[in-house]
Length: 234
Image (cartoon, rainbow, N blue to C red; front, side, top):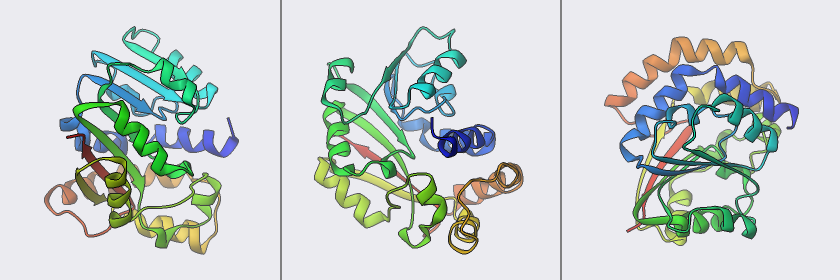
């Protein structure tokens, strides 16, 4: 696994408040048969281990290995190692489809994002949900994004159009983590840093995330560091 990618995943594994915040936001849309695309080392998988059926997919073999070790007691988890857009991967996923696909901070790494969304649409059952989180606002794209392999950041309208082209007719979009914009802009655009700071992440997660989560539960911000999309296959 590339050093910077591995470090970023390890940093995010320590962001307990952030990860739980994400889970609370998307929990109402999670069904019982779930495909997690880009499961990484299991930072979010830990919230899904009690599901009836869970398939975890990642193109990095070390991620799959670490996740398997972490959740070795859960026999309900199926792992697939490979590129999601590789046609041979289709033979390994459920022919019956999934009622939920979770794709968190992965789409920005895929050059053919439209093809990826179309494939997600095809794998969903009718009435199923795609739960998507992507980095938001192209205006704050900087050295951190480049170092992490982000091809782009997304704004509401372009993402909505991509999802519509993929076949989704009913999409809910929401910016969140508004205060995080400042830190990302300073680190990535002004200081030109190329790695996430564990110390910064821990401080932000412990002191700021609980406050931001509470405020944004009452007031949806007009912008944010991340963009959540819930798309339903009608």
